[in-house]
Image: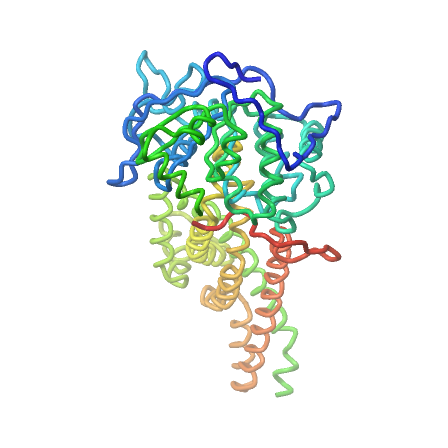
Length: 289
Length: 235
């Protein structure tokens, strides 16, 4: 469980919707163990002339679950993409654990990271995308075993066993041979979650994972993620427009606007008594929609 | 007409040579297309430069002139090719350049989200290409490859000019022996057409297989459930 000394932990709220019970198999499919913290130090990210992040500073404690909220274009998704090394920083440093992510040390100086360093750092990080992004040229099983076999060096049997455990957990054991195109959006997203977890990441990034789903499929995926968050030691960064989900899943909420943190605090405070006008306006707009 | 039909053994021998040159040329073109096409889609500037050099040079070179050059000019500097080798090399280099553009375009047309998912799974650059991007790009390559294959087959007619006894070469022989110009060339047109049809069918077969692999065609007996876009929508 995440340490509670750095951040106020929120007791898990009771649901009126029962969560998907996680399979209690002999082997726990979830990643456990020391999760690293994350630190952004004066991070700058530009797209052309558009400055998305300007000297952004923030930290996430090991095992902490943080949700980023804010209007579109405020830089939330960019933060996740920087952490997944899908984008490069234009200034400042990102650290995961004690090591720099975007840079590496060479001759006592920090230089931009090469592919080898990025490969090393990515071992700790997994990401689930808004559009699932399953590989359409592979069935469900191979989507789950490709990384473990070819990146982690697991034997095929070990990878299959791990995949089975995870598919059991996400409630799709019977879809192991299915093709992504034969699955509903909700099922595809469950497979994508399982695929990310199959790499045993210590940091999990969730990028608007329910935004592309039909409304009736949203709850199931959210319940699954809630259970995963509660039962693992993952450091979790989540971008979402589902405020109820944000409230349930996070230890801390960061409200972003124009690449800056406008307000931060435990979910009860942010959603219950937001201090900043910008936060109040945003929440009103979201809840009204 | 009957005289022309009587020469069918010669015609078939010629057709066989045409098929051989087509297949060998296509294999060479495919290898070159993949190698230089992947280079063209790479991030490294020097790899893209190598792609441009190859494509621009060999796409701009007429296959016939290239073949003459290999067969007649290179022996002057001590490099000797058999007519067959010169023909296959010329056609392979020429059509490999067209193919490289097809490969490059197809790789770039695979949704960027697929590349990102491969990065998120920590696949190495070569693994991303081989296991995720290329298999999906193949589906996009096949239809234009089908066109190029038939183009290549028809272009083999020029090899008669370096003394290879292909279909066109045999046609000229039969026409000279019988004097039946219209009948001879009508028959040869039909033979080219039949070869093209067979090649087209083979490519179609491959297209169907690839579509099944990508789940765009239900496997036999498979039930389709609530469909949803796989692989992420293009941005």
